[in-house]
Length: 86
Image 1 (cartoon, rainbow, N blue to C red):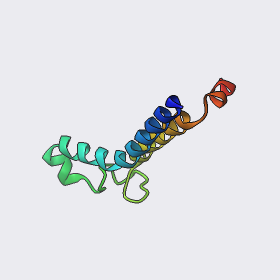
Image 2 (image 1 turned 180 degrees about the vertical axis):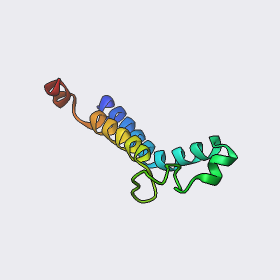
Image 3 (image 1 turned 135 degrees about the vertical axis):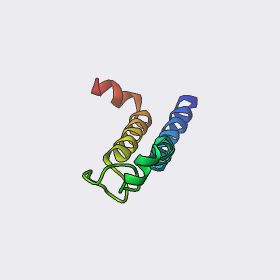
Image 4 (image 1 turned 30 degrees about the vertical axis):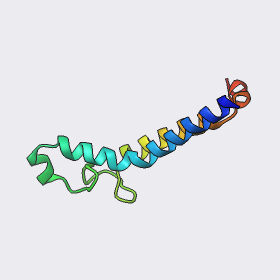
């Protein structure tokens, strides 16, 4: 029972990280940009104008969030299913 509780807590942490990832990446990208890069940037999240955006975020934002959600799903799944997949 204790392992199940730990697994749920870890999965919840990954889901929270997935929710925070797009804005956090934007903040870090903005903080590390030079004044010239900030002036030339057209996209809110730091991607260039040629990048495909969805809801104001670039593919790097969404792929990071998807990776955290995938990790949460893997942690939350039962050990029996994980052993069957390997």
